[in-house]
Amino acid sequence: MITQQPGGQVSVLAFDIFGTTVDWRTGVADQVAEIAAQCGAALDAGTFADEWRDRYLPSMGRVRTGEREWVYLDTLHRESLDQLLEQHGVGDAFDEPARRRLVLAWHRLPAWNDAIAGLTRLRTRYILAALSNGGFALLTHLIKTAGLPFDCILSAELARTYKPDPLVYRTAAGLLDLPPAQVMMVAAHTWDLHGAHEAGLRTAFLERPLEKGPDRAADRAADVTSDLAVAGFTELAEALGC
Amino acid sequence: MITQQPGGQVSVLAFDIFGTTVDWRTGVADQVAEIAAQCGAALDAGTFADEWRDRYLPSMGRVRTGEREWVYLDTLHRESLDQLLEQHGVGDAFDEPARRRLVLAWHRLPAWNDAIAGLTRLRTRYILAALSNGGFALLTHLIKTAGLPFDCILSAELARTYKPDPLVYRTAAGLLDLPPAQVMMVAAHTWDLHGAHEAGLRTAFLERPLEKGPDRAADRAADVTSDLAVAGFTELAEALGC
Image 1 (cartoon, each protein chain N blue to C red):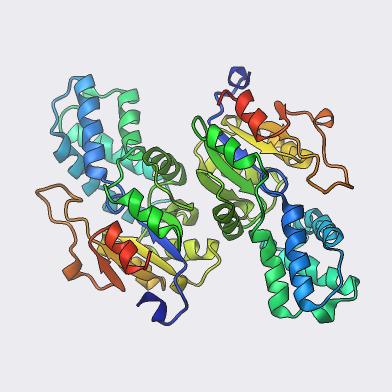
Image 2 (image 1 turned 90 degrees about the vertical axis):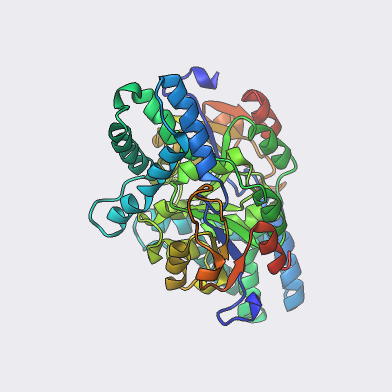
């Protein structure tokens, strides 16, 4: 199905990471719980992870729109963290080293159960790239620690802006020396696929109903317009003939 | 030895590729021989590979010094190829598709015998990056095809200049979010290590006496000043405690 569309054959699959390939909520909540306990602070770690992530898109949006200069995602995470700790009235409990460790929680997150097996299958036929708003160093740490078999890492940092700015996707295709239509973006978020489509990439929606935990709704396939929509990495490998 | 030097502990090893990690001469000569035979042209493939490579440093030097704008390595390879084919009086034998295939020979080269095993050992303790003058796409193809277990790919293309411009090494350290002294450049070429040292990186000379074939002299350990000098990937892994 994919190869019959205009614009040439897809040879690269570019994967979103947070939420699509790794379970950010479980990983961040577990590390928040551990560090909060060590600091003697009472926090609902799951709620804290949600609130931290809620500040993610708005903080990047200020860079994307030019309201502020380019800053690394780690810096945005740190600013959001500092605000949240104050808001929860626990700022005094978290010293500088604890806050640094919390920011580094985003460098070490568990892969979703189907990710490594699915990527391993897909890698036999496609070039697999990570394409995330995480910085290059963050992604390098995350992918190494989680053992994810990518062929290369591409970060929004290389375009010095953030997804869904079309420049991020075009920079990625340019570095891969391919027309955008020969790259397929795989993501669990409609806003990401919308940006990729704007830049001329193919799109695959990968459903992660539990991405935001059991109590919050994630994007669902029924609400998305994309070239392909799948329930996970296994179905993606099957849909792409791997 | 390495960890006791000032500037912090080395956590990333950055590897040169052509000559250090892969055997460019055998790979290019084999593909030249194959394509020349298909084109009905008589060429000494080994000599042709040598002459092609001889134009490599001068062609990049014109970009590095600002004499010309940034161009991809594939473009430099193509220009050198066109000149060489004319010089050998076989220009008519090689049509456009044959010349494109020849340029792509540099995207598919065999790893040196010790590279995969050595990198696999080193990867248990260090982040392994490719840092080459090859473009990002070229390196992605090369590393995937050769099965080299790198954690990430960094290309001179990301700095839009060429090694040994110190900007290439500094850009790499910056993307890894590390001070230059925590990155060690591993290369078989003194000019590469000199550039890395200028940029503040640690350096490891890796001897490849046959890099330029049996009849030409490669750089030797005795002539090099570096933090470390080894005879190959196995000795590098041992020297770094892996």
